[in-house]
Image (cartoon, rainbow, N blue to C red; front, side, top):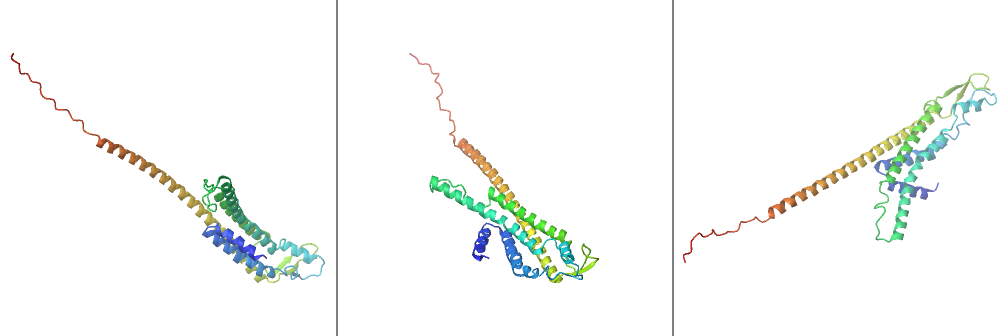
Length: 263
């Protein structure tokens, strides 16, 4: 595994994630990927080899194993981790696309031109929708694989003894699973971490939608306040101009003289 590439990928995804996204990423890579790589593969490494049935009938062992374990837990979890981590790269790629577009715009119109994005990594416009859709996709992937794990294996339990009646077994035979308790613990651990990731993604969607609604509401309030202030200042200006007009004074005209001049 290329740890330098993984470190660069994690730093890039963390840079554009919210607090919920950072916690989600920590759970995925510390409690799911690392546990899967370090421990789960070793626990399930002897899965078919140590699956024993009390019969020597040729083919019975393989048929019973395929009936109770149609898909390996390890391969199913590997697919789940691949599908659940890849959408995070879409956010990084979208930000890189914005930065490249901004760079080309500056080269074409100069450094003093109007910027296309004030902050390419800020979740606005298309990037906001990309981020939310990746969260919805991750919720769908985790929920689907948790359901598939329950549906395929009829629960999350590993019984020590399994009764098998599949052909070509001559009759009902007893089969035994290797390390059933250990496998049960790992299965429950992976299911619980998947459910925790689903809850974190739901909380992150609610946080993003709530924050966006608050910003829209505050923007509308500021617009109304600015309009009210403009109208108020205009009315004050008109009233002040009215008060400053000089009073019209009637000129003092002397009363006409009615004295008769005597010649």
